Image (cartoon, rainbow, N blue to C red; front, side, top):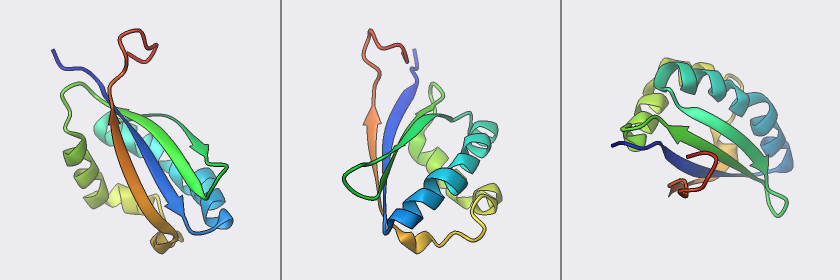
Length: 108
């Protein structure tokens, strides 16, 4: 049986202004396009208090290949359409931590 896979993505941005713009303007646009195109659910995102970081918890549908979905999304015209006016060089790093929901987790 396939289970839903989760990941915690961490975006490190160059400045407080870049973090604010990414968290309030640009990332929210991914909610709709990820869901409509690939059935990916964004459960929420949080700003770091120690640096200019945005933490995003999302999940992929059962049996999906997250690497394949990330590749397809980056290549999809809709992804670019979400980002007019955004300078991608302000994203200094992106890390991805795959997660499995614990047996008693409400997200399981």
